[in-house]
Image (cartoon, rainbow, N blue to C red; front, side, top):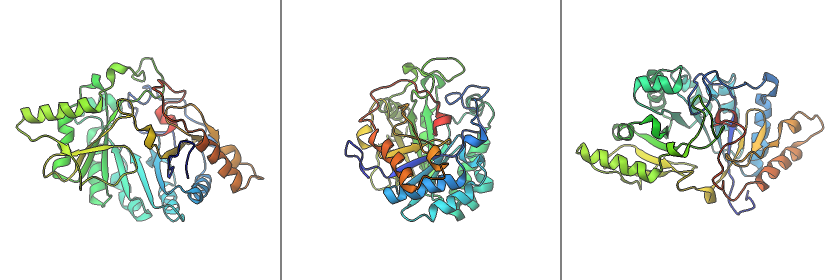
Length: 335
């Protein structure tokens, strides 16, 4: 499946819910956001119908996001059904890790192959400030569970925000002794472009990925450690745009995702579906195409669903053109 710019689109990110058990400062205000009405959220069978149609069009990779996808009732059965859909090769999930210790075994049995776990600091007090309601022990236990049950790869995603003064070297060293793939993601202007309560994005808070690698190497040298080198054979399997590095002899890798300083729009391979059934051609665009209305039309067949996906495909922009701010925040779009 090709878009108007010749890019192969084979990846669909599906938000299962806008609800979350954290309140991260870069994602939503402390009081949370206005939640979608229950009837607005796609039903499990509606999600499966979109997956089936998309798979027939060439989508082979599905990532489930939120909010926090593991708070969605029926997520294990949904993963089992998606995994069994002809044409779907892999199903992955992005999570804060809190529910993984009690759900990992069932998720693995259902066909989930890989997980991305969000973790933005290794300092317990800062973790509580960032998430507002969580503890670092919960997420670290989730990482342990993901490794214990054999998910591969296990990636740890850290959003870099300059004003948080995160310890990048400590994060990078997580990749040394265990097969963890730590990825640093530039802070993106999604949601309100200005404002209080931690939702406002400012260019001054963006840490360009090249600067981040230089910082890690400088701190490593000061600690008597070797520098990161470009990873080759040990790069984790992936569907996205990360550039990977590695400490000599490390079991894992360190990746950087640079949507702003070195954007990868020319390699974009995805569409997004929000929890309320809107197909988004681009994370930074406010263009949306309503597939929920079609799914709930008793007279609409699968060709009508396909037509909505093709509309969104045709609307994919060549790049994000440094757009700042979107009508919806990340928790509403899907991380």
